[in-house]
Amino acid sequence: MNRHGCVWGRSASLRWAAMVGLWLGLAACGGPRPVPQPGDNRGIPPDLRGSRVMLLPVQLVSGVEGDPNAELAFTLRERGREVEWIFEAEVEEILRRSPAIQARTRGLPVGLFLQAEVERVGDPLYGELRRMATLVNAQAILLPILASFEPNQAIPGGTPRVRFTVALIEPRTGRVLWFGIEEGGDFVPTDPRGLASAVDRLAQTLFWYVRR
Image (cartoon, rainbow, N blue to C red; front, side, top):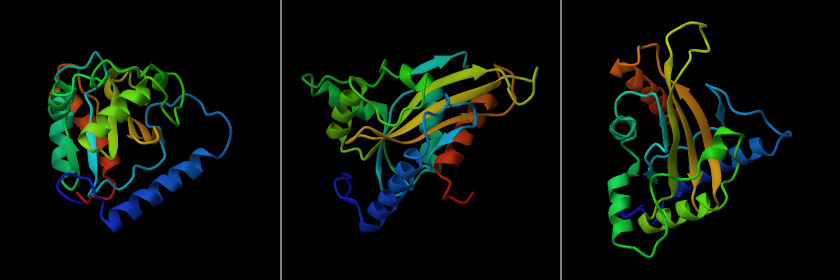
């Protein structure tokens, strides 16, 4: 791939195609699925090495102390060093220079993800994501849907946890390549380790191919 992410290397393309095929095969089996729960993962995250990925800001935040977007950007950059990340500031700058493009990084209509399993995003969300991805030559979009502070379902009465609900989307087709709900450790709301542990857990799932 060149420095602008316009051309994928053969090995990266084959890895991506194989993982997408696996996910689509899994998605085609069976009938309607229940609403995803904490710890659920739909599909397997593709190997993102050598690809250009747009990281959008968290669309909905509920009860989380600290800055989920800053924590995500820092951790994903550190743990996914072989990924060419496109962060919000770069996208916003390009959108500012392209006023005719109707797209936004925040306030996107993501509510459907919290109601049912989504296999492919439709308009208006699809249109906005595709327009942004085209502007920055993104091959995938990591969309953090929700960061929330939720009851600990593993231990009734236990300390609540920070939870991330995230989708990885292929912008050309709107296919959801991977969807996951990841929780951090047991920390009180004001403890920054709660947010950090949730982001770390998300990074472990996304970069399953990286040895720590």
